[in-house]
Image 1 (cartoon, one colour):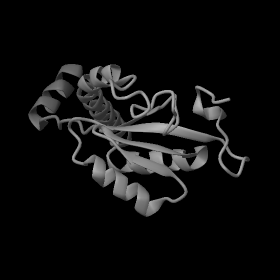
Image 2 (cartoon, rainbow, N blue to C red):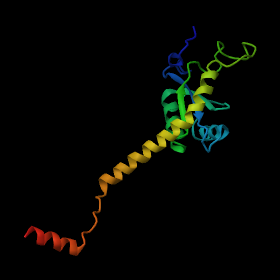
Image 3 (tube, rainbow, N blue to C red):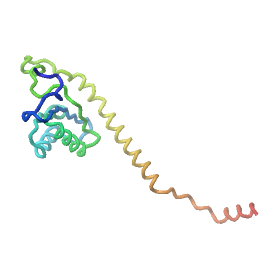
Image 4 (spheres, one colour):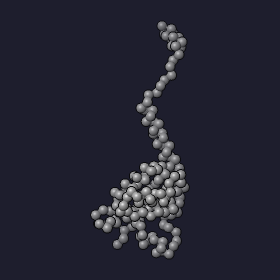
Length: 160
């Protein structure tokens, strides 16, 4: 019996669970889905990769999928997003070829999410920028302005 959630799907060798993830490029990304596909295929093996209009879908052992996600986030940390996909690649329950066309399941929601990604990536950038600025303030002491000698002498005379 096929499982709806692909975490339960065993790989061909039977000892490691597989996972399917969608890699989604943000609208401000400098990368293309084809570029992601080639970078993944050149660096990793024993996985399935499918190029899509919004990025790509990857399927393989969980540990390999996690390392792919980390690798892709190093390329563009603010514009590459990922989420788990509930169905594995080629699942007959959602395959458009077997259903004779029609809209993709979840595509409407993905379309909505895509409109929000620009704001999320900008928020991530500003958060990191503020975090770096606060770290710099902690490490470098503030330089205080020097007091003019005449003002200093006046203060001393007033105190005495």
